[in-house]
Length: 387
Image 1 (tube, rainbow, N blue to C red):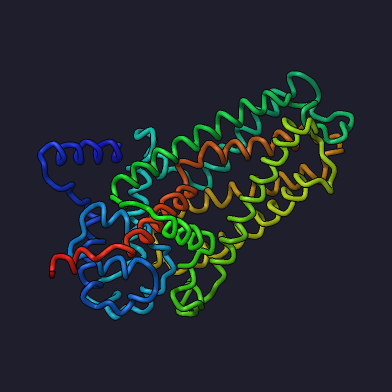
Image 2: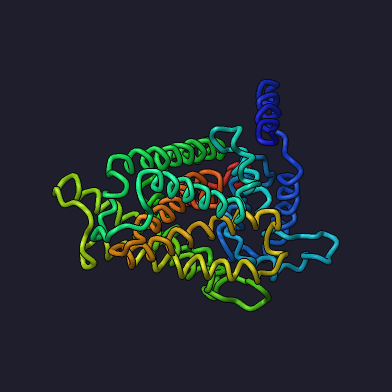
């Protein structure tokens, strides 16, 4: 409902020919950026601050852009002389986190589903996974026993290949469509300009390296205190590349099936299994580490209301990987059908919640990094006005 009200308010402002009004959270980011623009002590920490210096005022599009460019490393909060209890009450990571959550909801497609961001918690994610797994298990129980003679790891003897393709292809396709539309809305809103090949290459490199999780000095983020650590950057890398390896395993298996006429089950030394195993291990280490950091992080570094969304996504990633590895280890056992139902329930829950959970932060952050790579190659609007 809040996302719908925002769309109606913004549409009314556009019809009147005026600038889009700022919400309270957006206005707070604009206030803090005005103060930071006068100080500039944190200019070397990340891309947010040099991007900030190219502006004298901060409209809605500027606030959305800077909020999604922020990686929430926490370095600026610990360095800031105007942080609480100072009367200026500057807390850039927290203010940016609130606006990021707002952009996720406002840009969601379909718009009426934007409210799901406030409900995509750990309990919701696990309950959805359990419900889907129970549904699949009951469907199997109606057609035969859940415990059966070993089937040599042949999953398609349990669920036909074409049925799985339709179920998960439709779910994943919808998720990709929803995130693409949201990203397009964000991109149009921030007015990025023309992207050169160099800008695209730099933004891609910065996103893959998680450049701005090094605190601007290579020593990392602040988590529970003033001490710097690269732990969050490393756990993000385990998570991100583990996800990519699992996606690669599925892609290679698809090529095997349709192009080479090689059908599952595949041997433990085959490329799909090796890629999936490596990705699964990464998706155990990364989410477990991120959850550990999330639980012990200084509460001043972010928005407490978003922690359920963070933990929901982390929990589903971990559960998907854990059930996948367990299924691989016991695929030749009599419990394979039951284990398969549990794993498929976790995977489908992950796919369903992708467009309305923490995963979208990677989409908008990559877009913001690309805008920064484009913008810094252009003349500053402030310098042009001065001239």
